[in-house]
Length: 431
Ligand code: GLU
Image 1 (cartoon, rainbow, N blue to C red):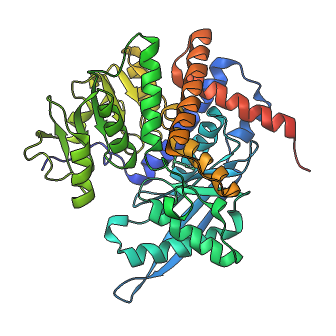
Image 2 (image 1 turned 135 degrees about the horizontal axis):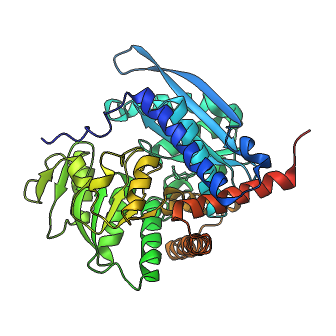
């Protein structure tokens, strides 16, 4: 089997994540330095408001007790309650969650949701946990962060390594503790217990909406576009499927275990069914294409590259070899600042994470509204409203980039920081 860890293993996890925190600041600082924003709130906007670290003891299936470390970082709530996902991964650490919470603040502002930004994480390897262990961990983590979450305080959601079932346990734990069902405390729930239709595919759908809107400005469509998708979890797989359904050709896909290339096009539905059954893409190349390495996938011949796995995937070593002319960031922070510069110099268009992957939190907002009102929307209503928000956000970023003659990331951060800045300014300081 080809090795797929080469790129992410290059740095020690601790070093990588504190670098990720620095990366988030590099993008933030770039905007302040280039765009002449009012510096009054600069330090405030770049610091998390609250960091909670918790220990979650869990009884394992063999009777032993494991203690898992969890975090919830609340970055800024000037625009509304904190909102952001919870990640389960072995590489989670405090700095990573801090960076993700900061990115979430600006993402939520860019699509004009009435939210601040937060993120949670638990250090664990979800695929090594049984259902019972995962449930125990989720319930304990929920009870530990209970004092700082709530429908008007901080609303978690899924992220890498968590899903609708995880959110169902969170909902139940919180509801049991407050003594009544509280649909608004979490989004990304199963539809049958108050989730929203269209939430599961929403991040991938948003990637598709933004890419399509960008192509339109060039007089192009998705038809025949050759796309490589790195990461075949929720975001990557839905993006691949929705793009393929609209005429694009998926020439390569990958997960942690396997990367496959097929010039004739990969059937995203078939690959999704395979992953559902086997919980990995390992073995999928048999009969469906050529096995390549994850690194090769990033450099593969294609029109669009969608990094939809973890942060720091596209670094200075890979960037000069990227053949795609468009990079649409499905993941949070997949491009390091050094790679960002190289790609821009090479004329690659980067559709930044806070724009391209904002579809998930946007439909989370719809779910929160539906839950608070106990009034539920149709799939068409969800998809149409999502498309409107994503296209409006893209149009604003595009206009800003034109007006200021800057790249899309700088334009997106400028709009987002301006909005959070404005909320801070209007509210002022307490007391
Ligand atoms: N974890 C997702 C993100 O990175 C969704 C967050 C949410 O729905 O609150 O945007």
